[in-house]
Length: 556
Image (tube, rainbow, N blue to C red; front, side, top):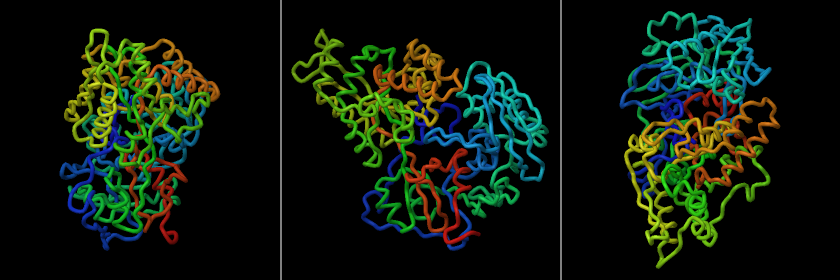
């Protein structure tokens, strides 16, 4: 299970890009009483992208070490991964690894492509092996958790062979996402854990241009291994990136939830477009260590009592739809869906069925209240994070709907750090959180694997509801132990049944990926019709977009 993962967090962070952000407010923003217009900077050329992708605090600090949590966003456009993964559906795109094969469930044999570092030094398989060994020697840099899966690494010509600790087929995209650094430079670094890497040398499509603490630029790497695919000559990244700034400054690409996006971003320029694909599932997360949420009939009663379409509409202002109870992001992962699950896992509000489920758990309605055998009203606290306005609206709507059947819900809204701590330590009754991942195995593993179960008070990195079931663990083992796609599909469909029947968490609505772009200068953006990459402008995803965009009106 994932909870609001965001661009500045590392492995299994608890914040998220797919949840919303604070709504855009201010004169003319949201209320639309004043028409806001975007004014592109006339000094920025037609081959240059103005991109709202990095945040100063309030100024930029010059850090391009790709493994630091406070790195500059562009670090992951300089240092590339072996495999580029589309977070929308888990598609694995060959990148620095030209191809790979799995001779068995414990071995990944990757063939690296012909490329060079931006200083002209050839890129080789030795750089890949060096990178993984560096992460083993300096564990704080291993932000993807590579050595939770790796046993050893060896090189043979242009091949890198990754030996895994166990049968672990789903480790491929995790290991493949590792950013690769140059041995000839990084082997001379005295302390990689604190290395700022102020003058980075990577294999990526851009190199660092001008830099100051308020703005920096990137220039096209003319020696890039797919240079012919990159028509963007320069990137400009300012540190000022408020939501008002997003609408008015003339950005070519931004990423932000904006209230009334048509009336703000859309109205600011005739070339402004947006695409908000599903990128996760916002859910109720019951704590299985706290009675009565360890009772599946209580969880089923809560699920059946809710009108998900109404919750989705209220929370996301109509931009996102209700989610089913399969653990899949639909339609992104339609090919994995078990056709035998009714209505693709959508659970309709059914008050009578909800009350019947509560009755099996010992709760009945009395004088408008849902009470137990002792006459005590069913009540609980629902925890979310202060400032997540979409989640707060969802929590308030859940509160309102459950009050209609006699359940008393109080809201707890700690600051984000307090929320994260409460979820990780099990200090909650029910929380707003999430499920779903572009990688289907990781979606189910992070949601339900008992390997993450800890006692309340001890931090866990996933499965925050602390669900445990031997049948589920056996299915997860079966999934990770087979290289046969048909066997993986069978296991995935069985796991969907577990989510549907046992309700470890209760899916509510899809969280969005808030892609904002302008097609006046660049065309070929990912869209619903061509969802080749998530529209986020952080992490490695932009590599897949930079290499697909074309200059509007012709080549450079």
